[in-house]
Length: 170
Image 1: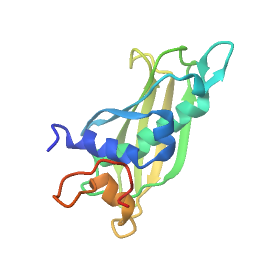
Image 2: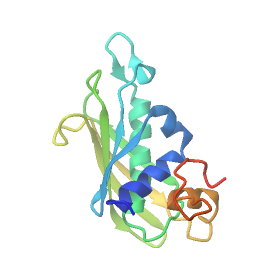
Image 3: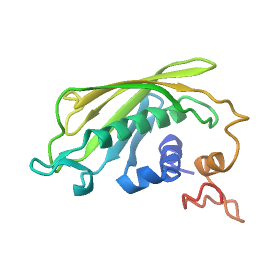
């Protein structure tokens, strides 16, 4: 059993998302208050080659993913929760050659909608690159059953151990 089951669950969720694998996004921290993901700096995500600044689309992906996966911190069982609305206010560009972190919390959970908020930062969370608010639709446990659920909850091999291979339960 993991020392932090929420962090492990978030990382398994990330492993089921191919675009997050390609971007190198990983789970950095998770607890009942929220989730922090890390987007490593890479030349592949630079938006302006002259300055080396990360493209805003990569930060948008980080924040949408962080808000969406933060639902694992508040829901007792896995549910698919697609994005309904996402707003990002950029404060300033990310500094070149530095990783970006995204933090999100679920501040209201209703039977149908989860409301999230958070921020992207580099060295200091009190100096955010961007602020985000998002709403996510709860699809329910019945709709959320299947391969993705098995992967997020931890696909198990014949001995009952987590596979951890990101194969979406295949």
